[in-house]
Length: 192
Image (cartoon, rainbow, N blue to C red; front, side):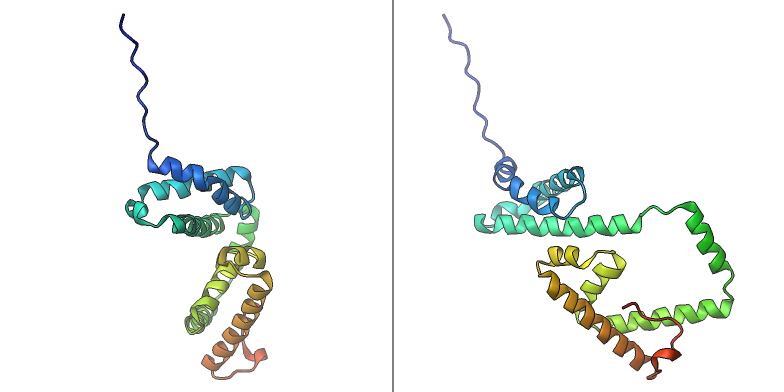
């Protein structure tokens, strides 16, 4: 009598062992920074899909793989908040009020506003890169100081201090650019 064929032992693909080793740690990292468990699970999947698509991952030393995966998770979180901020939902009634206000602006007021925004952007470009990033995360992405601290791996107090210093320097650079106008002479205040 012939013996039945034994099941073939198939080795787990490298991504499976990587997932087994680091999924819990990466999940805890993203779960602490996202509102829902479902979002964290989706983010975990995105991180490991990126790892699967990264051709040189095998050449990353074993000791550095967790750091590599955390960096991927960090960038996925930034993208998530960027997308969330860009595509946030607003009630139609709120938008209608804003549109009515904007339509009432005279062309010269629109030009003045665009000019001021251009001056603010130019002053922003003169800030150190880390200060630009902190201001971008706070005002463009809409993150609060604890969220920024978590993304940058810094203490919340340090982020608050960076925000304060960045805004102070931005105000100084803006006023220099405007020809040293006193605070009351500006048409649009810089957020503080």
